[in-house]
Image 1: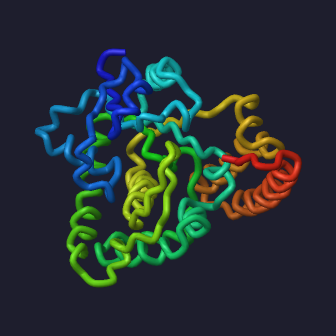
Image 2: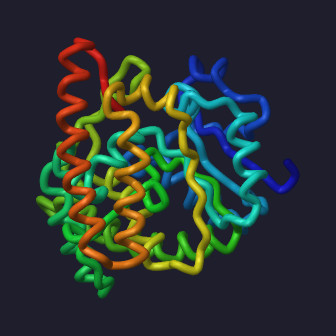
Length: 286
């Protein structure tokens, strides 16, 4: 597909054999600001006179295939089929997206305290959103920053994120700043564990805030077929599209009926997931 560039970020020599030839490798071995993870690369590229950006551009991890179980051809084909979209999302955590009301209730499970920190920041910046009360679905969630956007989308996103970046950077030397405490552990999935501040986990959730602030942008999201969903979510697989639909309909109509339907679906998903983990010890539902 012409006009498409996906940069693939790598930072260790042993990762090079996993790089996709049709993606553009981004050598991040220097890794100047590891606490910002992919966003530091995105920002650096954007500030480089916009030269790293095509009509459609993304920044994927070297292990995107491991996360998504998709090859490059499937990704390119989806973007081509949705050429009218301003952003195409490839989120690996399909159960997480569907099961939780929003990215912040999910954050409180894995990164307790994040919602309060993020809400205070947005309040200070004059960005009026209610994070805890918001509703997210597959068209507003991009875990792991696996998305491809148009130039206008990137421009608006970077303008939004620059305010976040400057706010957090301004607190870097402040004692006990909640943004700079290395208390959020993360497994890199390739044999090492990082102890990172809240920053990269907050950044990937800021995508959801941005998308809902800009309804003018058209979003498309990869949806796995049922056989793949069953491998990822077992008994809960068939409920994933329905839960997302309930939340999407609430977003579009504002009707509490759909939130009530989602709450019922959430209970059923919990029961199904619990049963699946009992039947498949050691498995992970994603």
